[in-house]
Length: 398
Ligand SMILES: [Zn+2]
Image (cartoon, rainbow, N blue to C red; front, side, top):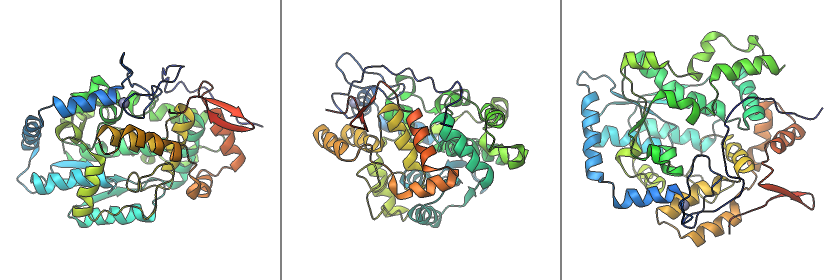
């Protein structure tokens, strides 16, 4: 029987039905929560201009020092948690906090679904740069089934990683009584330029379900899976296996004195490329010897064999792939021109993540036929058409 999606009421992204591309960078109006102005320029570009011309970064750094001083401990205990993959972004944040600002960070890592060799090397190298790290690897039998559920019903197997990536650091913070949890960049501000987030140093937990969890809590998702998927049963987990997939309640966070997700990108101008150079020098970070599939870069999101499918599904759902993620930021940062960005997009955007395809199927325990049925169930009809038996985007970038 062909795959038919259920009815989880999730991620109702009100994207416009006619595609427009930003005149300055390479993003389209299909990105959830992005705003295009009357000149056809996206809020991401507007935000870059704002950061370059109007934000007083000296003042922002003073705010950072004030924040750190509030949390700094003199008894030798950890005073800040940095959720870290060991990649270039979290490595940069942890290293700066420790060596520039004299904090005592604890790095915590929610394991990728399956580490790549280069990802694990970078993870170890970052620890060797002088950090104690907690690595949490969740119940594999359960997580694989959850990943399949998320792939089928949310169009993103990688969502199980996001749940833990956001929740686990706060569960640890709560248990150790550490009040400050400092993430790298605020994606809403950095990539979508959502004006609501541009000038906010942190995001309170009540906004996480909408912003990070696709509009559905972990418990709702799990209940849905138990009711509707015969491959997921109560034998697959115990209550303790669930703890790190959910953040502490607002009340619990308040009791510890945790405000929410703090972002380093509020205090320092965020440059993925700059972070890369910083970490090659300071945390032993090494790029991939080869280009990452779907884009031209060698240094972004290298840790997980599965995350190529996160970007591929986004390409299917919104027409926004992995190349765009790198190119849009680099165009805005002035590292490449828009023309160069468009050329890179034509060449790499939407490239299928073939290298780990077999691993992905095995991880989810699905057939290739089922994979494509699920993929096609997520194709947005206003974005895709079939030409001579092949799917193509109706409005690719010009
Ligand atoms: Zn733009």
